[in-house]
Amino acid sequence: MFMSETRHNWTKEEILEIYNKPFMELLYEAATVHRINHDPNVVQVSTLLSIKTGGCSEDCGYCPQAARYHTDIEGNDLMSVQQVKAQALRAKSTGSSRVCMGAAWRNVKDGEEFDQVLEMVRTINKLDMEVCCTLGMVTENQAKRLAEAGLYAYNHNLDSSEEYYKEVISTRGYQDRLDTIDNVRKTNVTVCSGGIIGMGENIEDRAGMLVALSTLNPQPESTPINALVAVEGTPLEDQKPVSIWDMVRMVATTRIVMPETQVRLSAGRTQMTREGQAMCFFAGANSIFAGDKLLTTPNPDVNEDMEMFALLGMKPQKPFTKKVQPQTVEAQDSQLQSLGEKPKWTRPEHTIERNEAAKEKAKTLK
Ligand code: SF4
Image (tube, rainbow, N blue to C red; front, side, top):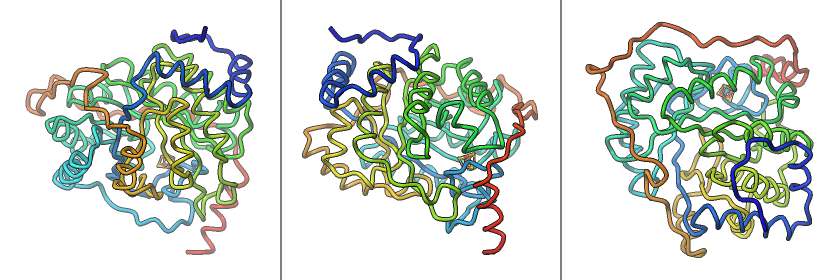
């Protein structure tokens, strides 16, 4: 009999044992857990919208939006509420139930721009779509203001294991990530948190990330599993693409240790065949990002996804299937004030040589 209840005490050894099972055993177990907890023919579809691109002060080694690296992305200021509304309507018409708005910020700062984001949240919630934001670190008060505006989910990825995180990002610590998740958990907003494979981490790190995610109580309601898209100009530009076998193993293991979570296929889908994606759905993935771009990296065309769903007999999930729609409180009726605060974060004392090298190289290219 397979385990399907949600546990919060997974150990790295247990998770490694699952990850390393013979492939067919792993797939069968994950598919069984998936069927107990979800309709296997339904996929949740999110559209990711970059509402403010580029110029970020952090040094995440995978990210083309970090100002210190030299990449070809076009930066832009914060989009207007009307622009966001138009994009959300387009996403809705093509089957998305959720809009995830991403801003390349280290953290949320109280002020005009955050007020504008709150208005975007109200606007999209009123379109009867789930609204998610990924804006960097947030304080408890900022999370509460987002909740009051009608936010459904907040994304903040753990990226990797605590040990490997230090090899990729030097400008903040793992605990800073956990603190933001904790602040979101003080509201009714659901948590979306996952990570990236293919950054040079080993299998222990993958298991370590799943320990960190699965021992959160409650576990995140959604978990994106990204395959690194190695972008020229970033410190991770030379990483080899993730094999589909690793991707399926990671999805299946996530499904087994986080049975109720929506497991999302995220970055790296363009590198996968339809057969590969079908194997991921069979292994327990039940969410995708739609749209031709994922913030700044390529993603399959919406029509291609709908063709794939038709081929597999799958259908998009309706909004608010898992949780009721939050109420939107209008700005003038808000009980919460802007406190003018910034989240507290640590400044770890380590440096990452390849991040420094990418920064130096960028100076010579400008
Ligand atoms: S991943 Fe986010 S925080 Fe890190 S550099 Fe990119 S935009 Fe900034």
